[in-house]
Length: 199
Image (cartoon, rainbow, N blue to C red; front, top):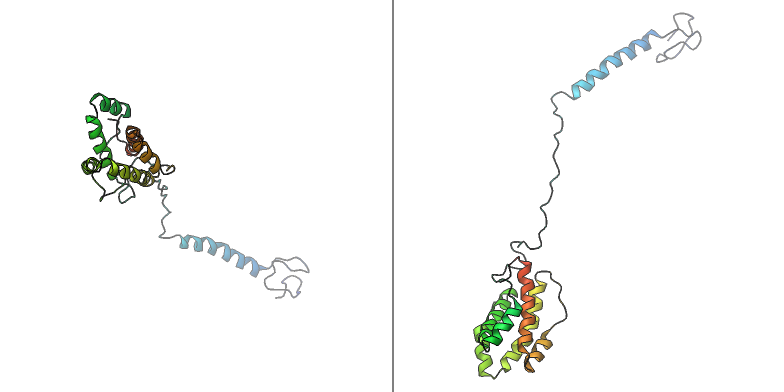
């Protein structure tokens, strides 16, 4: 375009004449139109929109190691902890009668803790031990080490070395009550895992 003051030719989009510095009326009008249209466009884009709502983060429930998880690997047990010292004293005082009851309960509870559904019951272990002159009891003591490890592993409890040989040898050499005490100690750990009180 031509400058209205000096007549020099310059770009239509220039704000001022490069020769005399006169303002370009067309460029100023374009800038004014843009300045008015820009806020309107911004306003139009926000029409009908709602501000985002705040959603608090979801916090997971507190972990409880003693809580049973449905369909988890370890089912809760129905028995509680048993005082080992009292069991030993009652076995001695009753000349072994309480020891028989204790043995039957330990076998049944170990089958339950290890989820050994097809395991020999406590009463049957006692009868077979009588019939075989304790030979079956030696065999069961050997299997007890495996059952103890299965019960502890299913609950994430630390598993020590297999105690099968130890249980069997103690029983063979006449220290079966020590084996029962050791197995009862492991059962107490399983019961404590599920929050069972001490009997």
